[in-house]
Image (spheres, rainbow, N blue to C red):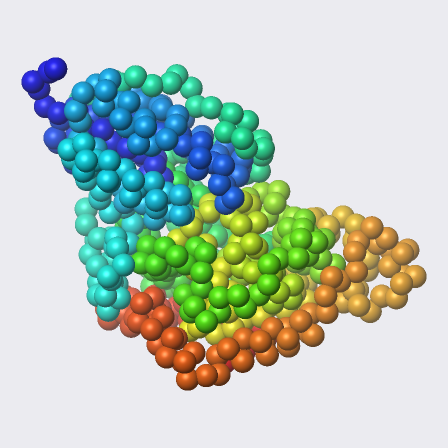
Amino acid sequence: MSSGPLPQVVWFKRDLRLEDHAALHRAAMAGPVVALVIVEPDYWRGPDTSGRQWRFWRACMADLAEAIARRGGRLCLRVGDAVGELEALRAQIGPFALWAHEETGNAFTFARDRTVRRWARAQGVPFVELRQFGVIRGRGLNRDHWAAAWDAMMAQPLLPVPDIVWQSAPGRDALPGAGALGLVPDDAGAAEAAGRAAALSTLGSFLFERGEHYTKAMSSPLSAPDACSRLSWHLAYGSVSMREVWQATRQRYADLPDEARHWRQALRSFMARLHWHCHFIQKLESEPEAEFRPFARRYVGLRPPADPARLAAWAQGRTGYPFVDAVMRALQATGWTTFRMRAMLMSFAAYDLWLPWQEAGLVLARAFIDYEPGIHWPQCQMQAGETGINTVRIYSPIKQGMDQDPEGRFIRAWVPELSNVPGAWLHAMDKMDRAQREALCPDYPVPIVDHGAAARAAHQAIAALRSTREARAEADSVQRRHGSRKRTTARKKEAQSSARKAEREQIPQMQFDL
């Protein structure tokens, strides 16, 4: 065994970059670096993973391997159980220190990280995990101080790529294909959009070209693909850090002249959403059970197991509601849709179809290339009305279509069965009689439910649960654990005001202030 510095194994997971990488930066100062990635087949067999996610992650990983090779290193690629692969690596290269970023993932990664920590303690392997987002590890968080801690982390200087002495280690020569992991190959999304260069290009085009009308254009599926930042994929896989995005946005905002009103409003709104990103991930970090159970436990069992026919109709875009179906089909084809459309899809599943958010959430998780468990699962139960603290918003699929796609261009693009339906009927399919439907759209289904009746029934069921003293006491507990707090700095007040204004500009749906 060598008597030199201990090898420093940097385990890359969803932080696929070299820049502003705290674990890599610290490891490089301690000794020669082994860059490690472990492809875990059991993870990719999970119910919330998909071939489209693997395709994007794989492209990001290949980009990382190339970046390491350009600097004289070689990515150590291993396939298997994390502990088993770490133990095999230790047998091959001798003792090492292990570095990684803290990860707020799904139940699999949560259990895996706990197992790795136990293994490291038992084997005497130093294992250091460092923060990547503005998320604080553990359950005992005081939310009153969270925003200040987030601010402090985002203000820290960006970490450059350090001078690295690379150490090679045995591994595979190539990443496996989707089929080798039991995944159905899925070409949704553009693999060429993955990686570090694509992330920086996307950030730059948003801040300097595309983002001026972000606040008003973020909701409609017609305008959002261009007006939104489109950074969610890159933040989910870590080809760019949250701190890099935050600081670039702050600098661009500071450089804007006062008369650039639309740009300033857009960037204030965007900065509020960057903060929101970590605020939601913190919920799952502090209460991992939220992937499966509502924050307010009295809602457990509110909805029966999913009706398979209803779940399939919704997932395939065959509900008989044109705008809902168009959004779902576009999502299934591209791997992305706007935040408002995500909320509408979950609202329709949870209220109109009375499907449990856990089962509907798995459909959406597999469809999203940018699946971020810490955002996704708290949002699913929030949109389903099961947090106990949020206003119940039941989105009208008809009104959403009229607001976001008044001419039906998006609907016609994704639901070709309706190409012959006149515009006057496209958002009012119930006005057509049977003969007209047979003549104009014989292959399109009739509405799977009556929206008004379903919304009223859902409202009554949730109102009954929320009306008791016990429900209010539980809501207070949820608010203390997970609710947002007032933000104290002038910058935060400005960003929050902008976000509230943006919400007011969107016409409210059927809202039940229970």
